[in-house]
Image (cartoon, rainbow, N blue to C red; front, top):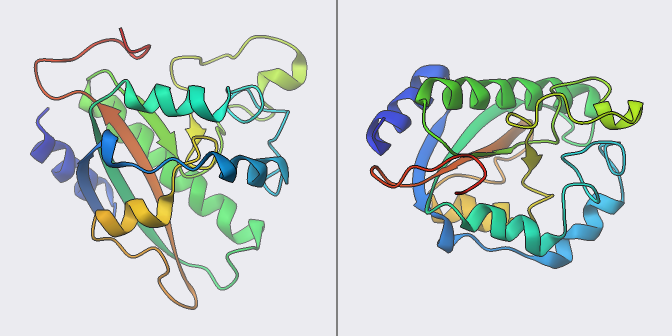
Length: 187
């Protein structure tokens, strides 16, 4: 599937915006990692795809940069209070589900970066002390990767702060240009 076809598929699936960018143009800010440690989402230390289990900020950066291109996807949601998890959690879940649908339909190797921590299992297998049930589909969020989302959105021509009552969520599908495909581990 070409980059143009990926963008078309994203729009068809319901994303408000989709743009392809070079991963080298992403800004990574390791000082964002303590935000994960605040555990506002409740997944710190209890989810394989979240810190500290997912890896260091540098390891996460390297994981993204193994891929040359990224399809950045945005959804927009009517949410009065963006700090109210009862409102944001279902929106993030729907956003991530659409991202997974796109990746499954794209049928090409790549890396998913979600709008929130992995929610494939509830609870995460980590809580049961067993290995991840879906290691090839598990995904970490933008925060775990320390991606400067506001800057990424601006470079893609997307609104980050949409004003009162409207919240934007972002995800990425990192991949290589046609002819450079490799497996999801980056080989």
